Length: 198
Length: 363
Image (cartoon, rainbow over all chains, first blue to last red; front, side, top):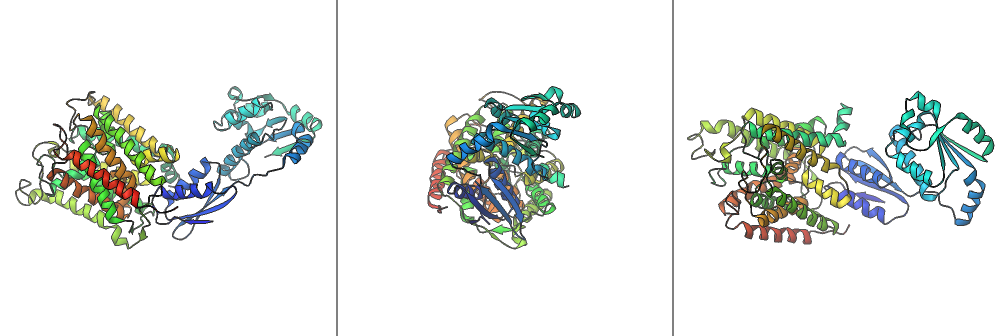
């Protein structure tokens, strides 16, 4: 779906986009605007609402694509199956503070990832943060509350001690406990599945 | 440069612009501008209307260099960042009328949104009523927006069209410089300069124009707008622009304290009256007109500077509205509201409702 908002003043483009997104559960909307401020307003609006925006500059206007949805949904039956297979037996290792190479985007994705885990209650047994990943449990104001909620749901959270020391963040740990590489080595043996991000 | 570019889009960018205005407005007052009126877009456009003889209220006539600076500063910023976009055609006559009644509402209160904050920062309690009215007016505007109100699309146009308001501003600057040499130096025209009252109080031209240019430049980059600040909170729960307004208020308050310009109270405040009802309703009319037109008076000047011919119509509507406001006894004065001010506010509200209700498209 394409919304042509060229020549239309603020705040109409955002309102038109909001209206269009509210009518779909999943999909992509393209909005054409003729000034950068509107394009930036749209991306700000999209990020704030958990959608994924992308701006392309055309010759005399901007094209903003906003994706809504695209979350993997599974039926209740499959879900219990998966929980049996993974759920309790999953060790999640986060070795980065950004998901993928593009740093700005990576940080958004990382937050979205944990919020999705939380929302769908697809919880691992243990999450282990290492390397720049420890910044998420110490400095990242936006991540810490999300992680605290996940911890409150019964997930064990550890941050690598050597890494905390390396970044001089030992006194800054806001969620979970200090861990050692033993957690990883033993974890790989004990847990059925290990997922490594970073 | 790209770092600087992105800085203007951040929260600290908008805060720094609000703080800039908040610091320099009280300083302009110290350097000569009227009390609690270091910068006031509505009052200053009214002074310009007076200087051109569009009204003959002898105490409020002066060509305010700040206004000229706002437009030209924005023009420079728009060219520097390749954002100058000449455009017109989104209901120009409606913009003119909205500007006209916005000015009448503002002159019943005695200030634009910026001055509302500056008055509050100077201790003027009457500003609270005005600002409350502003919020209510913008909220009503948001209701219209939610129901499909739109001024319609503009169109790209010739570069020369975008230059018309900036050229008018350059002409005003020429009048400012040459007026004392023409006629009898401002007593009986063609350009009138007040000999007493607020119009006779002004900072040195060079200082005013430089601060005006800097403000115009920064505000164009950051889209600083006090109407937008309120609208975005109500409409999309976005506080970005509001940080600029808060910064303006805090910076002006601190600067006023430091300069000994803070005097709390309701009665006897400079260029203000204590009629709570019409302070509130005057600013409600102004807020509604700003919301329907898409920007506070300052923002309209900055938009006009970056080539928006429709915003320029709003500006001209305000200047002409100021002429009517004084000729028809609509504008308030420190002694109270004008004889027909209340009537005009009610007519203005009806006109805004007429526009808001009838100009709807299905979205």
